[in-house]
Image (tube, rainbow, N blue to C red):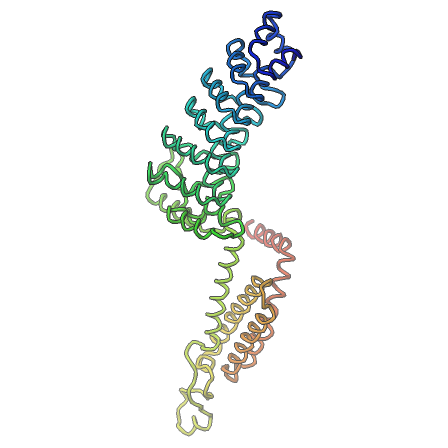
Amino acid sequence: MDMKLLDVSLSGYVDHLHQLVRENPIILNNICLLSAENPLHIASITGHLDFVKEILRLKPEFAKELNHDGLTPMHIAVVNRYVDIVGELASADCELCRLKGKDMNTPLHLAAIKGRVDIISVLLLACPQNIEDVNAQRETALHLGVKNNQFQAVEVLLDWIREIKREDVLNIKDELGNTVLHIAAWKKQRQVIELLLGFRTTMNPNSLQVNATNNSGLTALDVLLIFPSEAGDREITDILCSAGALKASQLSPESEVLSVGIPSTPEMRSVEQAQNLVEYFKFKKGRDSPSETRTALLVIAVLVATATFQVGVNPPGGLWQDTLTPDQINGTGTNSVKPHKAGESIMATSNAVAFALIVFFNSVGLSVSLVMINILTSRFPLQVELQICMFTMYSTYNTALTNMAGDNTKLYATIATSIITSLIPLTFRWARLNSKRIKDMVHRVTSISTR
């Protein structure tokens, strides 16, 4: 830029500008060829309103040019909080409000980032459509206001959204699929969340999608809960839940759309609904958190351990309440009742095979459940105490079952509860280490059998 013109732009003297133009009528035209910076950029930095007005009259196209930082004069005026200059530029051409600079940010985007509340109103008054513009990350001004903790700016933007009835902007997603509610939940901004949820009561109840999912399959409630808990999180969770917010794992599966031309029968629809339901309840790595999965597995393991332990100490058929020796049987002359002792299992005496099967499968179930509990609680506190509890529990089961077995099944019960079940953890460990080899073997056997 010509040094004289630069000095005049910095000083803001309109008379000196006229004098330069009289001396060199094409001085303003030469700027376009020699520099990315024009007098309007300089005046927007220094804040000379009258100089801006005169440049707009002489060279209105300067207002659309980007400087070497990728900013238009309006971008610069927004950052420097020159409300009057922003208003002058907007009145000259409302489309200047939508010009995109560096990172495709509009002046409204910068106003939201910087919290320029007064400028936001000027820009939206001149060009309400500006509210829907997105930058390179597909973020609206509302996204950026929430992301940069500019509560007053967000409040003004929401007031304008209500005024111009553009509640659809609330559901615009950025490049990661996050709505404004996702960002507010991530930043844990209770006031913003309450303002957003207020749209569901003051306007269309469906205006804000509280259960929209992002590209990771997370709802706003998931985003809130996935980060470490802080003071006030419980209140925010209650606010979201009272508005109908759910975790992604709680959402109903979307109905399948049938292909065009394929007839749909009631039987086909019922099968598809059943398949959808099964698919929905399957574990999904990206949807279900490790903490929830561990809790569910721990609950299942505890239930199995409880049920199998009860079967062991209270076997089916009950226990004999009296003792009957062979001499007593001969004395009564009846052979319908076999010799037994008080406390022995009735089934062990009357049906040894069935009792042996129950002992085996029940002991395997108890052993596997205890191994699961041990793995799932491996890094819990009080680990020594927990190991002692599980050891004494299984020892009690082993002792009780061995003593309840009859003379003909006592040896088997001892082996089944002591030796066979002790091999289960080693068996599982070997299977995990050789899982690929086992799969290949199963595949070869299957392929041979199908030939």
